[in-house]
Length: 360
Image (tube, rainbow, N blue to C red; front, top):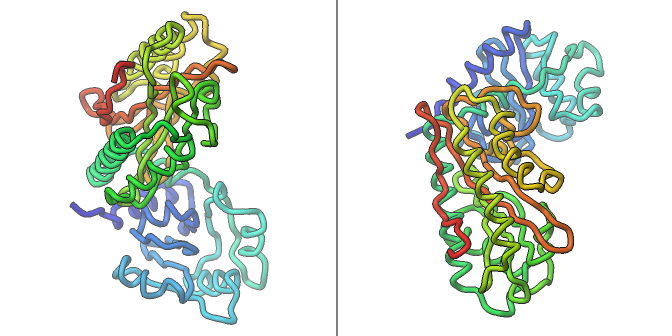
């Protein structure tokens, strides 16, 4: 199974042409990768009247030729600066009015592109590639499944290897090590490991707190495999389950299952969030759930769509989202349960398989 980059570029071109532009500059590295297959950096893609041109420098010339065969290359060489290279390429391609990714370019970069003699007039056009990336094709879904499998195996292996003196930091390092051993390129984000009261930090950084000193530990981790991410959260329980933990965990689990049950094509993103939030609010913990119920992911760990209050967009088959409600109680700890879910034509498919009962 191979990715059809030309088809992706054609769909993007249809989007920006509908908005009145003939030329579009893609500078966000994940978007360039999505549209060309290039895995390096410092490279932009110019789409102009069906003619894709990759603007880069000599460091990547061979890699571009290998990963993007058939695409036209505009390679910068010293002493030409990058903005001079852009000006020259745009003039050569006959570009006078250019749309660009305003949400992925600094003011200074945009100013440099439009400054100078005979420079193209530019206008921001945001979110077009993100719109395409929100719906995954079969190849992307297969990559995500492999990423999930590696993340799950790494977690199980790390847990089996745990010693009483392990700290949060050691667990985070072990997850990275296991993911790489299993063929991943690394973690899809820095793992979040919080023991006891530190589990109340939704994005807490692993520290030197010993896991064995606390009754439970929250672990949020993911792998990157073939460029695609995964994202899971589980709670590790030491021995006897404290009654308060059992209660809070039960609320979060019911909330997560309610949100998963609401996922289907045509479902409103905000309604999926509401399904989880309603359970947590009814249990009296509404103020302790301060983030959205989930998000899309793929080439990046946070992509469209968003499962959060006020999100009126509709889910489509092929979208892949996390479902991760949580309750966070300062001084005590926090509970979050996170699975990766594919929106299917018939409803949904929970792609993650790690057990999530407290007696796991």
